[in-house]
Length: 108
Image (tube, rainbow, N blue to C red; front, top):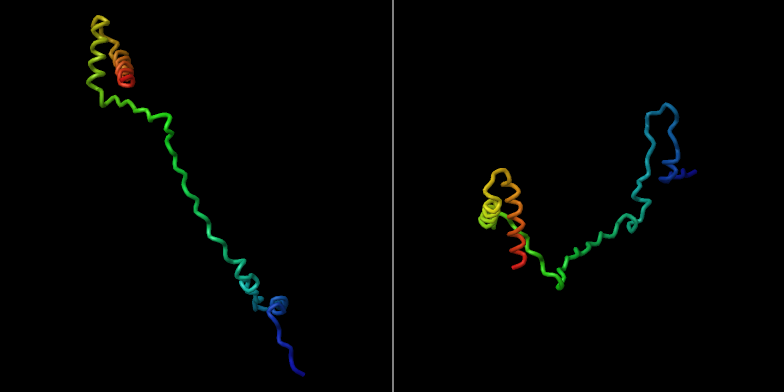
């Protein structure tokens, strides 16, 4: 009588007898999946959105104190003279001079 060949599923379904050192055969997982299921569609690249400046508002220039240091120093000196050349308020004179020069530059 011819012997029946064992299929892969029968081989994995049978367990070795207790105490035997032979590990159970594992089924090949790639054979169960179709090739279409294993391949993923490539991710789409999204186009970066560009910020377009509006035509209604021109960009406001940024006031840089370092570019106008001499003019600020002159205004602070004039404020010091108007106060009577008294000491102790140089920082307040400088801050007020910065505001004066900034207002002058933004208006003109």
